[in-house]
Every structure is written in structure tokens, then in C-alpha cells.
Amino acid sequence: MSDSIDWSEKCRQMEYNLKKLKKIRIDGPERDAIALEEQINLYKSKSAEIVEDIENEKEQLDNYLDENKKIQDKIQSLQNEIRKLQKYLSQDVILSVLTRYPLFNVRMVDIVTYRIRLDIPDTTIEFSLEKKKGEIIYTPGTGISKEAPSSIKTAKALSREGLEQLCNDYQKYISYWN
Image (cartoon, rainbow, N blue to C red):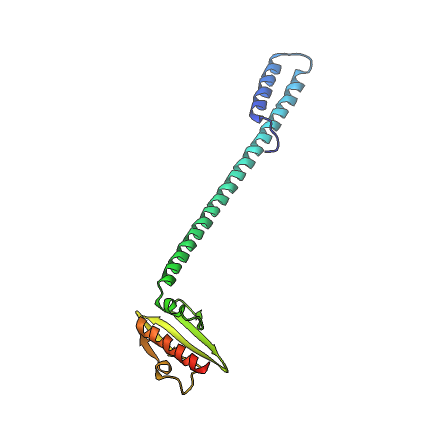
């Protein structure tokens, strides 16, 4: 609202003055009454425009508030998903075992598949671990030599203990190369 004039009060005053002028018959009262009536109509239309502008601004503000609420709900939903994933990852058997082996370069491919890379002199060893129906599936990858123990050359399903044993076998195999 650009003006701080109370248009409704101004209109009432003008209508009152118009009625007064119509009752008093002096020189040119008709002309003054018409001019006053035009001024009242102008104030009324100006007042109606201001009210319409206010209603439009209120509607726009309501839309912004609704949009903001949707965004806040989406943020809350994403934060809940992040908390679920963090809880899941903190309980993840594969990660809990692999994090104890600093030479393992672990990359999470998706929520159930991990690619592990080991950089040793003159070669890179890669393998993958995947969670399927409560089991950990080990798949040997590239860079494993013929001299490697059979435990790291063979694909198999593992328990937590089996995964720990596999990681220990890799540690021994890496120390052999270093």
C-alpha cells in the first residue's frame, strides 16, 4: 500500500459533504455536487484497487507459504532418509570389517555392492563384495596372481567371520608382495 490515507473514511466524508451540498442551494451547487460526486467515485475506485492489490499480495504470500511448507517437508523427508542410511551404514557388516584394513580402497557401487581395490607394487588387485539375502557374496576380480592362496581366488558366500578371514588372507598376500 503506497498511500497511508484511509480511503473509506475519506469516502464517508465526501458523501457527507455531497449530501450537505445538495441540501444547501447556493450559487452553482449542482456543479459542485457533481464535482464532489466524481471525486468520491475516484476515491472509491482507488480504494477498490488498493483492496484488490492487497488481496493479490495476500494470495501470493499464501502461495509462497504453501511452497515453503512443501520444501520444508521435502527437506525433513530427505533428512530422515539420510538418518536411515547412516544407521544402515553404521550397522553394515561389510563396511565395519573393511574399515579396519587401511590398505583397502573401498568404493560403494550401490547400497549392496562394494568394489575394493588394493594397490601393491607393480599391480592392482580388485574384487567385489555384495550383500544378497543376508549373505556376503565374494567375487574375485583382477590382479590376483597364480601364487595367491585359493581362498582369495575363489568366488563364494561368506559369513562375517569368513569375510574377516578373507581380509586377513589378503593382508598376508599383500605382505608377501611388499
